[in-house]
Length: 185
Image (cartoon, rainbow, N blue to C red; front, side, top):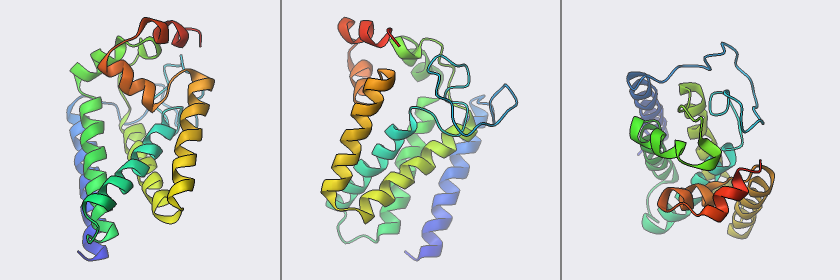
């Protein structure tokens, strides 16, 4: 796969992501009409609507995980092909995450009671965050990549009582003690 073909595939996957989210009724930008770089308030209606938020580190970690898994699974595949596969996985997740049944499941979690889904802008930039994590994992020694992922998980866990690990746990089974702790934010 040439670099041009890989980047064309990546752009095409992101276009499919955006169009599918639009067809699911997602808004292009925050309904507030403003585009902001960062939303730090976990209770803001702009969470998951703007460019970056507390869930951005989770998407960066997705990229790190995808890089490691795809490097092990497809060691001879060109890195840009592996990146295109990772974008396909992330785009599929973003579409699933913004489907009505998954949004409703998220709303049952303590930190996502008012979740209405991502804006298309936020979703596309979550995919870019994943690509950033993929690139970091490609460029950094694996020990540094693991350390960054662990630091991001601990930091977001302590600061906002949510992270990728807690998100997955809450999706599998909700634990009353974790939910009580998460409500304290």
